Image 1 (cartoon, helix red, strand yellow):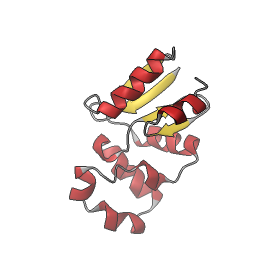
Image 2 (spheres, rainbow, N blue to C red):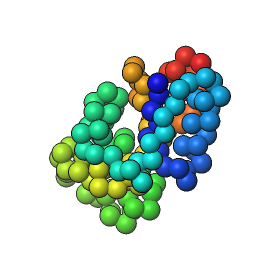
Image 3 (cartoon, rainbow, N blue to C red):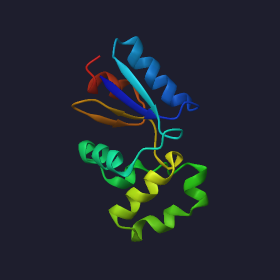
Length: 118
């Protein structure tokens, strides 16, 4: 079972879902914009990934720029960053693909093949 946290109107998220489905992976898609992720879920995914919390921000997004987060993030605690990520799914980089053994941020076919042994 693989979970994809994404946005249903995001073409990259849909490519990731299609790619995994076509490679016989059981996929659950969670729209993190419509069904906002709670702070605990985000925290768990970040912990499982081993990545820095900042890599989960959608730095190219309109909302990120509107909130001027580029300037604010360095002074924020991880707990404050989690609050911001949980406040709006559009602030989270997507897709985030989670399996029992791995977390992948973004979509790259080669990375997916290697990570999910396809």
